[in-house]
Length: 68
Image 1 (spheres, rainbow, N blue to C red):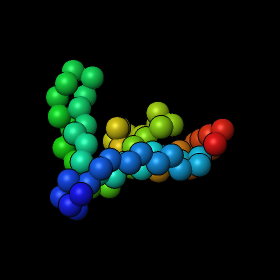
Image 2: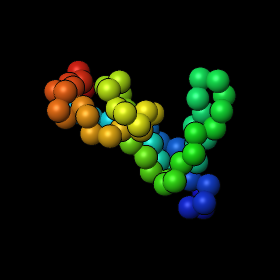
Image 3: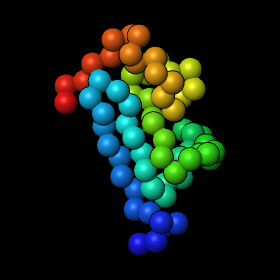
């Protein structure tokens, strides 16, 4: 695969975000596209980010913990 059409990967970081890499189109619940400005993005999984669906680091101050 070329770098332009990279297969997507989703990697959970312990006590942190999901790291999304590759060609994936993000959409809202209504189906509207969510612009991505980078090929690699951090997605919130604590639910507290002010820039959802992207991570803003709030999980650290909130003490978010995962089981993995």
